[in-house]
Length: 155
Image 1 (cartoon, rainbow, N blue to C red):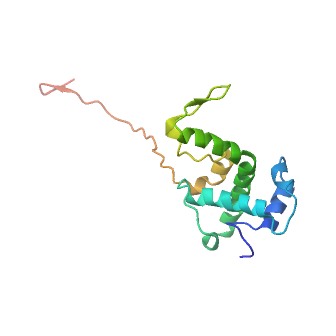
Image 2 (cartoon, one colour):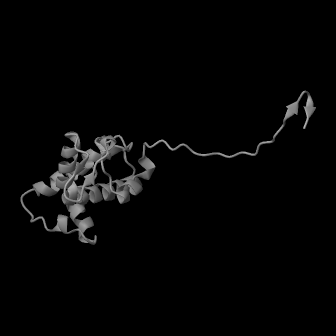
Image 3 (cartoon, rainbow, N blue to C red):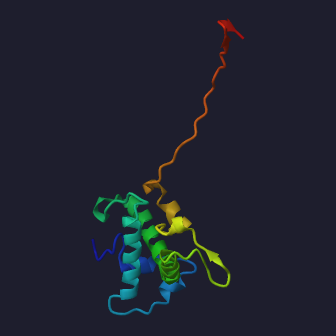
């Protein structure tokens, strides 16, 4: 472990974002001693993923090399999402917590049942599918025969 914040360190995160399109929210953060904003973004993303209950994620030391590749990418992608959208998400969750169901000029509608829902970008959810705790109820079909009897006479 060399300065990991969750699953990744700042050097590896910077390398990841250097090769990703539309990563301005990350790459525009001016380097400072320890990069506190980048550290906070990675830590917040890790916390959301690890403690959300949506995924059964291994700890850093328990993850395989293949799992770490996926976990690092997911953490980076969620940290970028949070750098771009967390302030808006917090405002909307604040409105929901106050019981607001319709707000703004465009009449945004909030479902009361979504207050405890933690947004996870589809790409991140897809990356972490193998760790998902979602219960999937499969549908099965099997061949059945019809056997009807009326007064002991088979129809």
